[in-house]
Image (tube, rainbow, N blue to C red):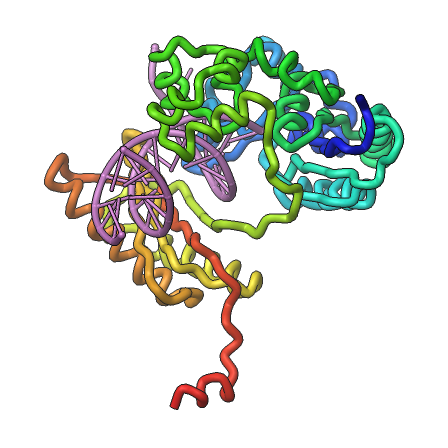
Length: 371
DNA sequence: GTATGCTTTCGGC
DNA sequence: TTACGGCCGAAAGCATAC
């Protein structure tokens, strides 16, 4: 029942990562509400909460809420600690932990700054040994970095992820081979990785709200509703079937977005745009990548988000091309929206470069062959 | 109708 | 009572080709 014919995948999720990093840096704040913020520098306190520790969460603070709102919630906790994000520091800690994880498995995939998947290939005894290894990893991170994490063990990435999400912080959850359905069945379909609100709504029309119901739904019904690609995929996921490999994946996009000092119209933020373009160009250059799709992100005074993008057949890396494209896209956006309501003013502007590929080494010889 | 690829929006942290 | 970041990948929406 628990032999090595099953895959062994471990999902690791570092608990309330940024805030916990701050607790490690200054242990005296451990018992206090700790709120890590992105300050926009418009006013002293404008900005949003990036993340917070569980003391703050217990009082109602959440990721993404305005800093002012968090301050209101915590107004009676005079010991509250508000700190600006320090990505450089978190990334340093993250890299050391990722090194530990990489050493402890046969296949490795970093999913984000605070999440990773590990796969073990050479466990030839009991499945329990996988959990034992996961437990050791948890302990090594605690010992060397003084950080807690949550761990999920399963026979594939989907199950490991569902397991780790089921208990946080400092969680440890194993879904044994054969126990997949037992674990998944009672959960709402929306919890399944890959099912968003729209898909959930669609499933409601055929009276499916739990994963267990989806797992038993007739193939044809799902294919009729979702097409012959997505239909069968959903049924497989509900049955805990996922063959996706644990492997490093290349970065898909870079983006940079900034909050303007004052809401502005098109002509007023070209200098900011140039700066962002320079940043992204440098990022591409140092990663030896080019981008075939340049996009813009615009957030209006009323906090409505708009985006536009343009693809080209050739890879782009230069600041000039990035800036030029972005500027044109903003110009088009303003012309479109001006017909609706004017004047359109923006609070935040950004550029995104995606559809990345390895930059081509331009060699004389390879070019000459064409002439 | 379905697959595919591109664009836009959403949602988590 | 309002308040409001920056970044990523996933999901949804849409156009086109067969």
